[in-house]
Length: 156
Image (cartoon, rainbow, N blue to C red; front, side, top):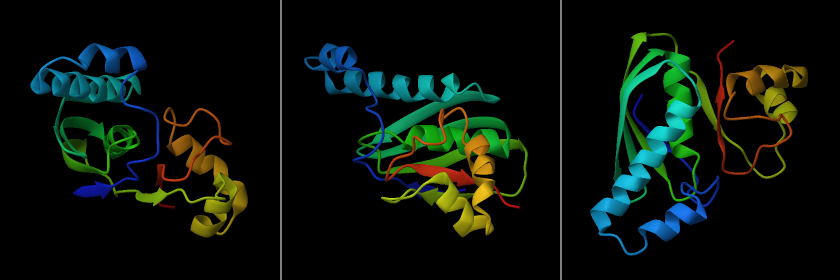
């Protein structure tokens, strides 16, 4: 898919306060490895069919390697890696076992709701649930999206 942009000042923190504290006095390479492990853990935590995930971090860019069984799993892995504070782009190097058409990605803007996005994308505000379902488990509540967050918009 390529290189995807994210708003680096939005999203949850990659590490907990305890993890941040634990790496303060560690060598840079060790601290970087903790961040890499956190991203890999987040990707596996979404419980999608992905395998052999590894990441590199260069500044604000995360490069994701591995394999996904489906295009949806790949897209959710990319979004999971990128929707974190301090990440401005994700370089997708994943392969897909069963290629399908790619979804469109949409960056949430101030004042957006899933209904408003659905109206703009599909012409029907009631299609908000399509977007919500396409972004589970990253989204847990259709009313909890934030500016800068990047969402999957499935093709219709």
